[in-house]
Length: 304
Image (cartoon, rainbow, N blue to C red; front, side, top):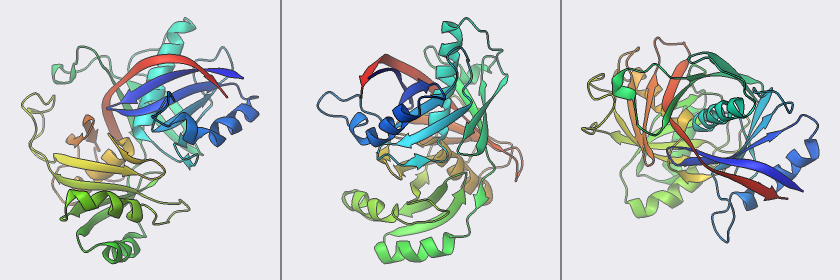
């Protein structure tokens, strides 16, 4: 059976985006079963960090739900960059179906019983404008300080003396923020062990190694924020090292706010291997906004 797909990325955090009708349950199960094969980056496979399944009737622009399948076939509860890619795909679908979408209007996205909101940023201050990439923002749940931080800190200390846990948050999925003082050669193996920590019903956590980041001269927010900049290395559970992680960027920003490295209402610039994301939370306990570019690279057909 063949199925149409689109390939999207947000700062190199890339996804296979597929639209399915509600009745295509067997096809969904097949996608889940074959996720590791479809996401492989060798021997002519499509290659991706995960698969985004948008469920919608054939003529509907907006999905009734979005399912995030990690590259190992597990289901994720949240993915900021993935949801931004879904927003890009919705915009493309609206042009194909000749249905207009108002700029700056909110789009509701339902993921595993969680509700997120996306927004297309058309009227941006000049600091944000880019010549080729569309800026998309999604509203994420307010970060919640974890109840498992102490247990993870103990676990991390047993894995390596070179890891220092700074903070742990839940944003629909679990995130740990840490510093690394060891050699880069050992970081990969340590991160793979740390991400196995189970909490909140999830088989593993998302790990983010942070250090201070000096904004580049071409940073879109160089003149809009004076501090709170972070450089981040990412390991996503069920995937491994990735170029970016949207919900992880939100967790990193939450850490910056909690440690008074940034003021609420101020944009926090997060530099990941794939590029820059910006995060803002106007007040503690409010939803947190994630902004960055997204782009479709190609489309095609899969045979499964």
